[in-house]
Image 1 (tube, rainbow, N blue to C red):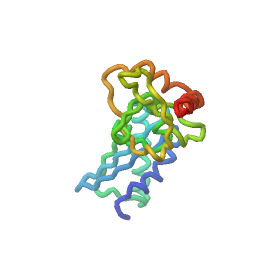
Image 2: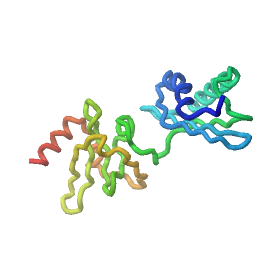
Image 3: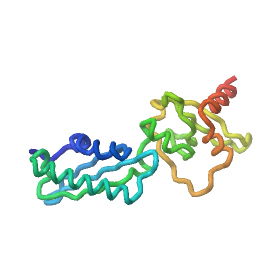
Image 4: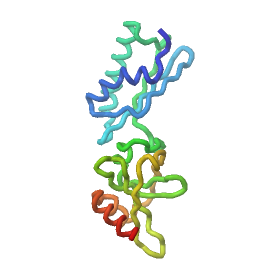
Length: 184
């Protein structure tokens, strides 16, 4: 059997992550001489703890070893397994990414927004536009997730403005009403 592709490993890993309520964000394999490397990035609505990551790592290691013994996969002379969480550079492409980053600052193209609520169907996100110096009030824009896919979280070193956070925590119907009134 050939060295496993990421998609093949993802299918093997999914029952383990599903049982723990985690999503597979990325599976990366690198065939590197004698030792291959498998990196699995997982996330959940609650960030996994180091203990949970260790448990997943141990279970995946046993799973991979058993699959290799059966001849289902072949890692070559050996492999190193790393189970981690995705970094802040993970582009926001799925509704769950937006939901998990509510209240955080993101860059969409050249603009910066604070992530607000998702619509009930999770296809529209409320983007909080930071206040301009003159008006002093943040605004709300509604955008289909498909049109802002690929946004990246910004690291903030200062406390976010309270008015922006308040809007970010407002439920979708509340920010939708604000966005509608701003258009009038």
